[in-house]
Image (cartoon, rainbow, N blue to C red):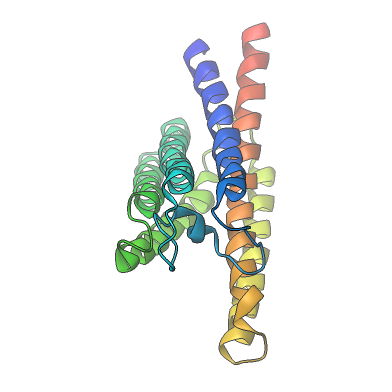
Length: 214
């Protein structure tokens, strides 16, 4: 139990650190970062389009993505280990590895250096996260969460995706401008996953701390 409690605390710290690093990167960007005009991936560019160096900010932002990949992989693997069902364990382990590698890959391959690999990593990470969140609903034992809570998160995720697809449809059919619609689409999905990981990590930490005190 002490090991799980330490892991839960480390996971919570990593979730907060990853969010903080991304937010911090916005303030070290060589030009004023604009929420409606810039994608988050702009922070990870090693150099801007005009050649302006962006090494420090890219290291901070891409480091946050690699950290996110590690914590996502370990968390879904942990959920799988708690499931007690071999098929679900295997699915969550696979989802964790795929999501973790995808997120880390986004940071390791900045868009300006390897745009196609960067985009593929984005889709791979999204697929792993989607499978992981859905599968985790059936693996709540020892996680500090309940089935109903996990189902609510799935419902929230479906709503987020519906908003994303609606905006995508309107944008691709020229009923909404590409900017800031595309940037909003990206940020609502990223924010959803960060909130999910924050909720999950603090729930696990609270549950393990309570058991230690009993």
